[in-house]
Length: 470
Ligand code: JFZ
Picture 1 (tube, protein in one colour):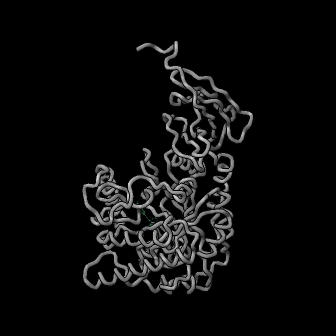
Picture 2 (picture 1 turned 45 degrees about the vertical axis):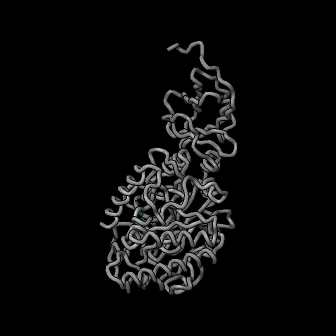
Picture 3 (picture 1 turned 180 degrees about the vertical axis):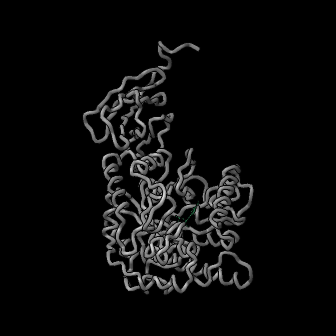
């Protein structure tokens, strides 16, 4: 129920946010920190990464969506709430946290094989359990038979594999005695501000213990306790910037003075990028940086032993990666490792298949951005920020065998090359209105193929002989 209500509130908030003009009509203390996109190197690195991995791992990974032998509906990481598990029973999972098959290097190897450039891990999900030995709570890996710094091992393994790490941190905390979802009394208020201090200490601890962390992925900011105290989210943002001015954090953290989320009461984005694209992609290109987080099954983030409903195939995921890059967005695919610490077979298979594609076609994704050409039904355009080359990511090959493109006047397509197949090398002839017709590669493809367009700036004649004079 709560999630449904929260979803509709979010949609309304977004609609209001986007509708209001980009003027600062309302005076705010805790509104947007900035107008326009960040232009620094840290943010450019985040953009250039384009493909990321999400990892949901915690105590909930042990029951894996089943409680006392019964299938629990809803998201597996919500099982404590969904299956109404009493605290004492849930806390007992701490003693079962052994992870006999955990090897952070295996996780990092699978991520690298898939071609992800960054990984976001749940340091603390709504359940409150911490994957690092925090000085500020006993509810952590330190209290388990596993007794190792899981987060530290993860950071090292991923960084060694050349992958940036980001920390998911939930503001909702079902375990901390001072967390409140709403504030109904002075005592609640005192408690919640103690909880605020606890969060500030944990965020600082995470940043100092693991100084290579590039950013945070905050979640659980929809409860009225947070919405009525936007300054708390602003304080967290300030703390992060103080410790590391280059830190990256999306809009989901932020609430302004008036309870507006993601976009402040003047319609301006708070945080460094739009963080509301949850299991969905925009229809139209957002004007801000943005990131989509996606699950392979339906709404399951933590490990659920039984995936029900539609399970996405690698080609669907590849198409979403292409769509995101073509609209200046990042795409992050979720993994929910098993309670023994190993990766599930379906996810390893997905990583292998996406990785195979990325190894051939990654130059059309990494460091790529929107190519401002008229959209075409055969798929998506991207353009390399570094070389200026454009890419056609063909997801719907035309039955006609002809791929049509039109580039803006002043540009010509000098050459067209098929990635991964040197035998395709075309020099397309220019038609009227700067249109080019390319032969589609004849052989069938199981996954999207990519044609690289080498563009050159050339003066194009204003009018062709065959253009009708209108
Ligand atoms: C949240 C969590 O509750 C969930 O367990 C998971 O961690 C996910 C990544 O984030 O769930 C949400 C949050 C926001 C939306 C939907 C589910 N939303 O904005 O539509």
